[in-house]
Length: 293
Ligand SMILES: Nc1ncnc2c1ncn2[C@@H]1O[C@H](COP(=O)(O)OP(=O)(O)OP(=O)(O)O)[C@@H](O)[C@H]1O
Image (cartoon, rainbow, N blue to C red; front, side, top):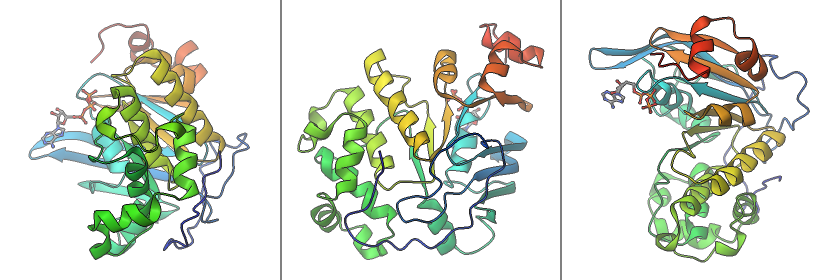
C-alpha cells in the first residue's frame, strides 16, 4: 500500500535521509508521501527517569527506514519509556534523539513538531474520539499535516475537509476496515478499534511507527491483521519500533530484536540470531521463558 495525501499539500519540509546501514538488503521505498526521504530515528545514549527514579541509562536504539525492531523485556524495565522518547513525546534527561541526523530537541518547538509529524504512535489502548471511524483516521491525517493551532482544535472543520481523503481510505484498507468507515467507533469491538488506531497512525505515512504492545489485548485474527499491516508498512519503507511481551510475535515480524533489562539493552541483533544463537545468557534465558528481570 502506498499512502498518498489527496487532501492537499502539507507543511512538511525536506529531511536529510540517513540510514545506519542495518537495513542494507531491504528493498523498501525510501521516500514518504511528501517525497521527502524517509529518515532513521535514533535514541542515542539516552538517560531518562521520573522524579528520582532512573529508568533508562545510556540506552541507544535506532530504527532505519523499512526495518522492524522489536523491544522485548520484563515489565517495568522501560520499554514504554524508550518508545515514548523515540516518538518524541518526552525529552530525555540526557542524551539525544536524532531524526534524519538532526538532534530533535536541539532547536525550537516548531522544529520538534516537524519531526514529530513524521512519527506515528499506537498504544496498548486505541484512545479513539467519539466519532466515526473515518473521522478518527482523518483527524490523525490533518493534525500531522501541520494545521495551525487554531484549526487543530477545531474538530469539526478538520473532520469535514479531510475525511474523504484517499489516504484515509487506503489506511482503512490496510487494516481491513474499508467497509467500516461510517461506523461510530463506539460500536466497534476492541480489536477493530485498535485497527482504527493503527490506521490513524498510518494515514499520514510516517517515517516511523512506534507501537507499544499494540496487540496485547487482541485475539489471533485481529493480531494477524495488524501484523500484516506492519509488514505492509515495512514494505513501504516505514520503520517500526515495537514493544511486545509475545516472543512469537517478535519472531514473526521483527528484523532485529533487542532485550531490555534493568541495566539497559543487553543484546540487540537480527531476529534469527537472538532466537537461535544469542550471545548473552540472559537473552537465552529470557526467550526460553525463564523469569529473568
Ligand atoms: N509517568 C510516570 N511517572 C512515574 N513513574 C513512571 C511513569 N511512567 C513509567 N514510570 C515507571 O518507570 C518504570 C518503567 O516503566 P515503563 O512503562 O517504561 O516499563 P515497561 O517496560 O514498558 O513495562 P510494561 O512491560 O509493564 O509495559 C516503571 O517502574 C514505571 O512505574
